[in-house]
Length: 282
Image 1 (cartoon, rainbow, N blue to C red):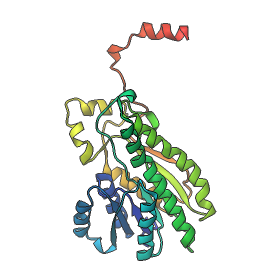
Image 2: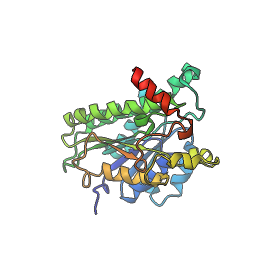
Image 3: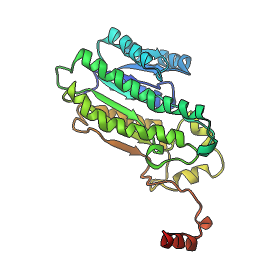
Image 4: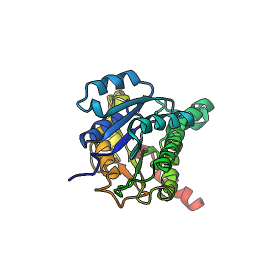
């Protein structure tokens, strides 16, 4: 099926990570021109693009997207090079490795986590809609598409990472608001989100190698398998497609093997009688 992405300009933030690289390859495989943003591993991203068969259709960008002016400058560069942005994948973010209870997390970490995972998407979305307002919608009726990359932590919470959970949960409000705002600029524009669960990338591989880690992760999933970066990329290509998902708007797709929650305590540690008593007291 022709997904209608071959003549589109697609921006991916956070393209230097595992999911970002998979996104770049997936959209480039559809024939799109890809603008790839990186920050901490920009040199690695440049080397990766230099060796890719689609390097002539790629533009590498850098910048601190927690700053609104950096987002504006990024879009200005793309518009200067290619004239417009049709699809924006807001994937930039970071995951604090140390698990800490809320009263033990320093205010600085909270601010940095929210800036990296929520504000970077807010400023990216703001700059994307501004670019659409400047260029106008496409004449062929293929609406623009904004795809936010969230996390199951924003849906189910994650003990020891309240800051990350709060940041990712905030993206839901962004989706539900912007789906109504983008159509003021582009009548067929759409805003959606993908919420991956545990996905095997370089950043989490060490955690998953610990004895028992994988068993604990898949304990809440009907599909006893881990997600891959390619799973996220394929979902993003589908939901961004003006042909395959033209009527999908304001939705969040959970890519987590059917996860419904997280196993917080081993069953043998739960005092069922005490739980029943507490329910009666309440």
